[in-house]
Amino acid sequence: MLNIPVTRTSLPNRVVCGEIDPAIEIALNRNPQPWFDDIICHGHRCGLLAPIINGAHVLITAQELARFIRRNTTFGTRPIRLLSCWAGRDPNGFAQQLADLLRVPVLAAADRVEVYHFEPVSPDERFRMFWPTPVDDD
View: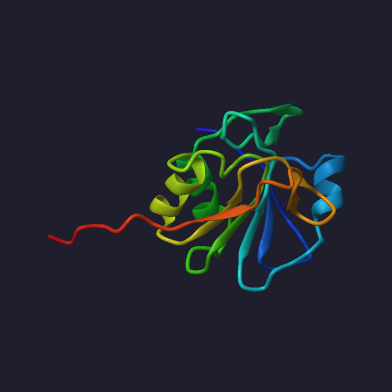
């Protein structure tokens, strides 16, 4: 099991998953949205998150991020905003899996995210909302 560093920010609804580098430093206190719980983390083109652990990017799954959230935050009842590149790239990928695991909506970008304003870099891309898949109670 990975020991992913957690950094609390000055905002009660925002944490950093992994070590802080210059790009994350810029993003720490920008553009808060009080109705979301924010996870700041690097992402990878493959659609997985890639926090920095011991100075290197390490790919993690939605299951590992869900475990990180449960252990390190009080998040879990409000929507999650993944401030991470490519986390929403695949309609059935990382963001959808996280929404299903945590049973909360997850907002994620399909492209790179600009750190000064948390907007996707490509003008054709936007943040996408991923809703938990309904569970059959039968």
